[in-house]
Image (cartoon, rainbow, N blue to C red; front, side, top):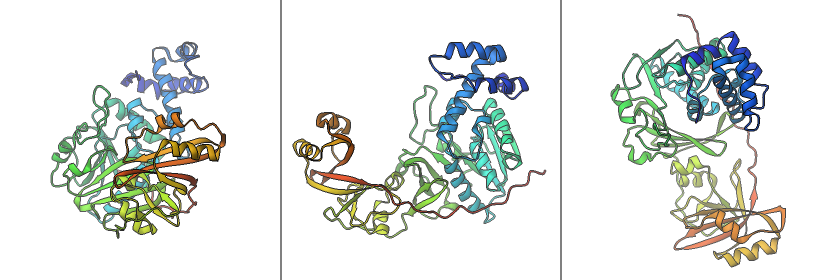
Length: 422
């Protein structure tokens, strides 16, 4: 079970004695094998706050590993386990902050109120692009952590105000509300619907005339959300990290897919872009678009942009003679109606030792199939088997992976540091 922090813990962790205890604990292994001995060593410096010190060091290590390359020193931050799990990767938060900045430059609001600010990751991103930012949360421990965390990133990271408030009530005026409601219930069960905590309906009801920007679970069924505005699917490192619901006054499309490379946009598509509906037999390459494109249902727009066609009207796989830049694609070496016998023959012929299996539209379980195929050749020789239902029947494609051609996206716009006077 994750450790539950108290206000007394946060006070100790930010005190001189706490800083010394954290520094000492950061040099310990803190593994399962050394846990008891390490905890005894930490108790000598931290007393009754030893468990909080150990948990903080472990959470800092997770944050540093998860968000490597960030400009923020996560070894100076305070976290809870749940807050770290839900917090957005810094490049994703920065992208959203830049888009909010672009919207607010039109003068519709004076700044942003993060009504579920938690430990302050989004507040740091908002302040980092020059926005006046206010943060609030119901949890006094997370508010105390946010105050500490934002101070570690310098004056530019400081919001104008942190306050304890319920996200379901309107507590500020003239500010765009932003919320990242909880995605786990009291039992720890993951929430993938609009019944977040607080719910989408409750967050909207706080000020119906000015709907908030919402960061929602990436797996949410946005088609049944019935909320006006735009849904943006944002991916980073090949995984969809969030679905952002933009209110109508900030929507420029119905659906958007944003693919981040590092901390800048590699590709962006909307449902207003041209679409390709042609269905053709497989060409030289198969292409599996980024998950954000798939989740936003923008496969046809992606095909049109990159000169590709559909393998089947109901599948996300595309095909063409030239793979798109910056994305892993698959060169077809063989193709045939799917059967295990055919796949075994391919595997023996090529003497492969490593087999990746991808499937769409079939009941095949890749891990189970791999165990039955049992590739026993040279592990340095690998292939990818793609099984896709074309029409009524599964088709097998024996492929070689083609790494994405590197691209150099444009740098994000610079923004002035915000004033912290007043």
